[in-house]
Image 1: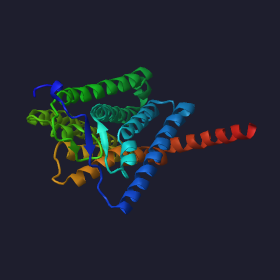
Image 2: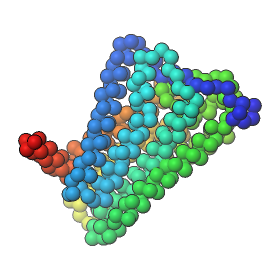
Image 3: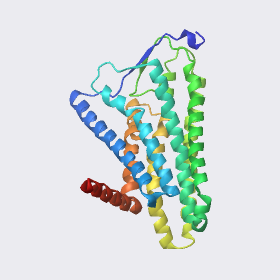
Image 4: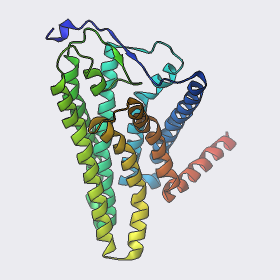
Length: 312
């Protein structure tokens, strides 16, 4: 069995989150409410940024794109996870599993690059305020988003081509609630050590490289501002604290899933839940409730909606 033509597995069984009936009800309510919050929260940010001219700036353009990516990343796994909670036989087709893995990593890789773009945007705004609009012009913002998507696709394809051609001829139980490259690769009927090395080098190194690059950039910003004034340092830290929180929540699970795997898969699943359910909801909460411009824009948008209802 040396090629894709030898594949006899037509579906995978997702073992999901094992729990008692009472726990399943709690998990369903938790995931369902969080996913509804993810959809409404992120779409609301996009709608607010698009409709409010005061938010037509580089920072909010990138924020709207982050919201779309968060919504896409969560939607690759959360709906199936919710519907599978009460199912005894959690089955996903072979093509469905491959597609899910591909889009998880497209969205994940794109978000990593976009977070770098947002860090650069904050660096320019804080350290070079007089040149901010010249540097972060419309063309630059569009380029950041395009490059982010291109790198996300390359990141996913480079691993996908290694997995899709593996022979799967027997075991088909994935001990998780979604398909991912490491879990699926270990089910192949051949030596997959080289595939695991590719996944670690790709997902692991790009995650850790991006994480440390972001942290270094934030430290550089704070050090630069500190030389000017303590008040400026306080304001910069307040601005960056939201970004730092998002970075830690997003990259911590990536580190333990792709670089340093835990011996217990239950903790592995919990960390994955952070990336797919918790972080995409916290992003709109953090960027909305901690941001004065967003709160003012929401009030303006609410008044417009109410006034339009009254006139109609």
